[in-house]
Length: 308
Image: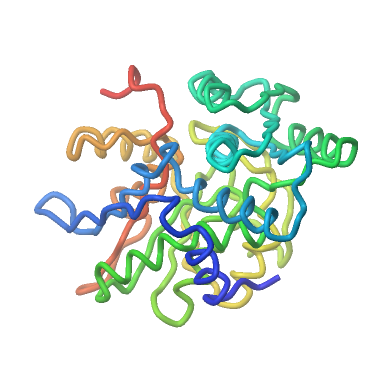
């Protein structure tokens, strides 16, 4: 399914003020790009937008019974759906890989969701969550590859161009591609998209080369939030409609970008959220003269003890 801007605008109307309108930080002497501070969203992640849109749409259609909602997650989608479920009075079950960061798991439980650890990576948790939904009747929420989830994420792009209409390029990190797909739908025909991935798990990049979604190996410092095994169908449809500039960055570049966000701006970013910024710092993406660029800092669920 190809998302459109109308899908994003419908998500914005549905979600309303249940999500924060996050700030847009203007360029400074040390930073030539605008920074969309989506790490300040409820739960510290953009996924809260899609979680509310998915659950509210399910409520509208009468899909939510006593079993509530079920989602598989490396951590952030689980946080977002647990938060939204608590706000809406919905039961939530969250399946996470064994290696999911404890800081995220503890917060998911604190929001009242049931957490089930299973498998060594996201794909295994996903299979278990889908089986749970079929067995119990819980409505399934995908962490990224679902139109309502992606459309919710795209609402942040509407805020970007409302706050600064002159921006002509938006840079986002890609794992499974929900953020990319939603932002691309909002901006199609209005701004360029730059899709940045860790070289250690390049789902969109490989799919673009292969002409179809393909499995990739999952590893690296950003795997807890960008570690999908393959790009979602919603994101793949978005790149077919209007291919983004596809950029890969290395592990050292991601680590350095995260360090710089903290050192220069006191932005506590997780590695996945620093991946988009890494493209500019490393030179993997070099804006043209006069190009007005916005980087989305999409998540802050990290261990603060590791910030230096």
